[in-house]
Every structure is written in structure tokens, then in C-alpha cells.
Image (cartoon, rainbow, N blue to C red; front, side):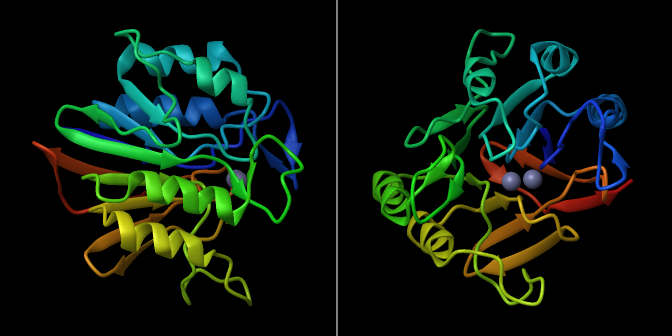
Length: 223
Ligand SMILES: [Zn+2]
Ligand SMILES: [Zn+2]
């Protein structure tokens, strides 16, 4: 099974920092047309202006599983449905199976205080990690990144609690986004972490093959 991975599409009707973000979904349709994935995994940040119609051409062609980030219409993400009627949303604490692949997510961003709906405190993240611990999982998707010397913009951008999630859950593949730095593949113990940026600035995506729950090598594609 061919899997497409995207992150931080950031659709908007106008420009942001001088970049035209209105073609984000057109780019995604082109990628899907070219790569013909069976499943797309996303770390969220589709853009708050994205609506159901934007997702329609995607959901007609393939299966989508996603969490939400800080630039999402959360209600929309929660209500997106695949062709078979199943939810596209990966709810915290639930493991979704698709063709033998076990996938789960941690939605939203980490903050000291819960000011907005997408915010989670470290304690809340720890609660979700405890929920997942001991359960077998192939792919873990988080919006926030792990703490790693290579995930940096002068200072490290990640959170240690995401490293803890990787260690305790031990997925084969961990996918994250949000920080918008050049996409990279990192290794912690047996887990491959993919930090991806598909926004207008970089337009990178990743491909991976999975057979009976076994995840192959991850390839980053720059467009
Ligand atoms: Zn983002
Ligand atoms: Zn974000």
C-alpha cells in the first residue's frame, strides 16, 4: 500500500508573508494524481479557511487520516468522512486500523495554559501517552515536534514530552510538522521520525510503502 504523507498545507484565500497560499489544495490534488496513494496521512494545519469542498476531491480518490493542528477548523476536521463512512480524524487515545496498519495521533499544540481549543498542557499529553502505552502501534502522528538538535532555528523547537511519547509507544514511524523547517528524517531508537513541511514555502511531501502493517523506507519528495 502506497502512503502519501503531508503536513501544514496552510490553505488561505490570500497571501501570507508574501506567499500565495490559495493554491495549496490544487498542489495536493496534483500530488495525489501523480502518486496515486491509497492512504494519505496528515499532521494537520490545513488552514482555518479550508472547507469541506476542498477535501472532496481528496476523499473521492483515497483514504485520509489526520489530526488537527493550530491552523485548522477543528469541527471540520472532526466531521470529515472517508468513502466508507469512517472518520478521517484520529481522535486522541484511539488507535485506527487501516489495512493492517495501526495509526494513532496526538492532536493540537502544547501550551502552558489551555487558552485555545487546540492547546494541550504537558500533563494532558502525558495522559494520552499513558493511554497508548503497551498498545501496539505502527504510526504515531503528532503536530508538535520532538526535541532534537537538528530540529532547531537557533534554539531547539521541540518538546521532550514528544520524545517520551516515541519512547513509550515505540512506533515504527512518527510523523510531525508545525515548525516549517526543511523536511527531515531522524532516528530515535527503533523509531523513524519524519518532520515535514508541505506549506507553500517548501511544498515537500513524503512517500512510504506499507505491507501488512510493515512500514518501509520513507522518501521525502521536494516539488
Ligand atoms: Zn503549520
Ligand atoms: Zn502548526
